[in-house]
Amino acid sequence: MFPNIFINATAGAVLATPIVLAIALLGEGSWKRRATLCRDLGIPVGILFSLIGMVQMMAAEADMGMLYVATAVMLLTIFYGGVVSAIGFFFESLFADSHHNEPVRSPPITQLALALVGLFACVAYVVFFGSPLIFLDGAAVAVWMLFLIAALLVSSRESRATNVARALLFASMVSVVAGLIVFFAGDQVAGLSLAINGLIYGLMSYVTLYLICFQRGPGEPINAPLTNWHWMEVTGFYIFMFLAPDTILDNLQDAAIADRFEAMEQKVQDLERELDNIDR
Image (cartoon, rainbow, N blue to C red; front, side, top):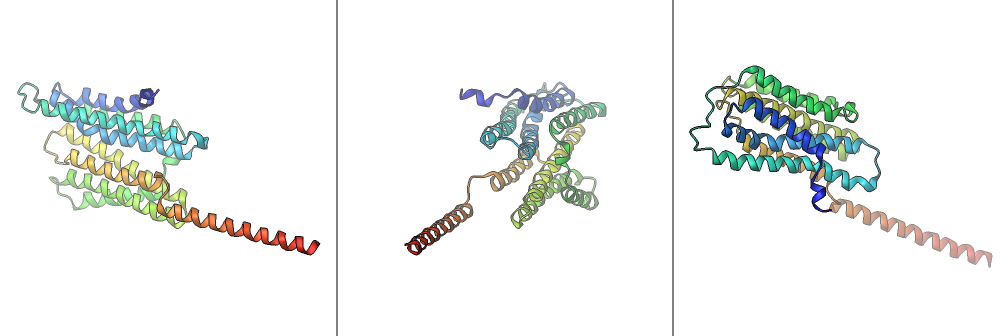
């Protein structure tokens, strides 16, 4: 039974489809390029689909007893993505010194377009599997556009890809922190929506940017391995703050509520004794 929890055909298919398409269309017969695509796409694509599943899980009115099971399924795409990236990392190192696997040219723009269509189609399939309206958040869109436009305005041609990649990461960070502020200020639904949709918009844009840069060749330095690590950090922070087990504050609040109930019970008992004395 234990190994079966790591097997989910749907999670595996939605993760593998855009990565396999990118490898087939942009690999150009080079095992080194294919391994690099696996290394750089596994983690962000896995996180992207996991976040989409998280939105649907929180929006669904499901049995609370199934919450842990649903969370495990949601995290599978991150697990699969990490495995794909690890495989790509080791194979990319293996082919680093090969003289027979280097690409001789960049793939044509039509192949990039097909790879992007495959990615967007998989995302659309997962999004429309539930209610697509929950993925619309005006505040998250505003933050995403603000950082993207600022990066484009201040960047030269040589630094544009680097600055846009960083801007997308910063936009997601700001959305998560702003969402936390809104959440703890009392509007939990708006806070959750801002944080998670900001992450989704940033990740989707980042994967798109990566594929464009990869198609153009190695001259666009976005440092995907390091950037992927930062995406993991932001996502881990989000998961911890919104889905972690009880915090110290929760425990203190629970203890305060328990003390109030105990005090109320004591008052009820005192009133019952007074009524008994009056009746006598």
